[in-house]
Amino acid sequence: MTAFRPGRAETRTTSIAASPERVLGYLADARNLPDWAPGFAPAVEHDHDDVWRIPDDAGPRLVAVKTAPEHGVVDFVSAAAPNLGLFTRVVPNLTGAELIFSLFFPEGTDPAAVDAQMAVVDDELRTVRERVER
Image (cartoon, rainbow, N blue to C red; front, side, top):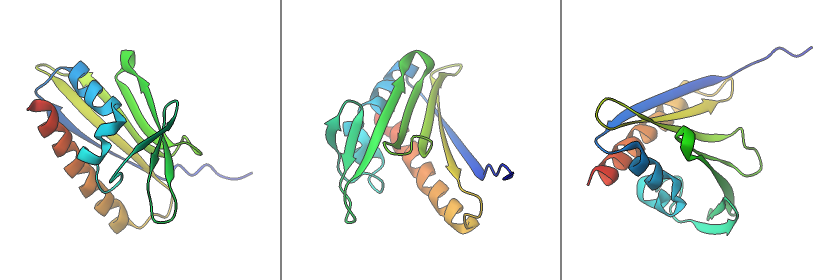
């Protein structure tokens, strides 16, 4: 029997002075990805249904944007492996919205690589907050 190895989970949050609906609407529109996550998606093209194509030198990556507005969910996952990606939640806080980003890293991922990725996530959260608050 193979032992369960969960890897590493990292979560970051930011408070946003806007309604949860406004934050959710911004995130759910995949056309905004190049604006707040240009390192991940310098451009996007709609492929089909909830799947978007992100150009890449190694060939396009297909990302499914899974939304459940009634639960504050917008997830950006691999169309081929939906357990891989960025999992987001938008919840009401006392005066606006709390935006939560969670990523999962396989066991053995270099801690420096995790730290570097989470620095990018911090920048993305800041950018979403700036865009939605203006």
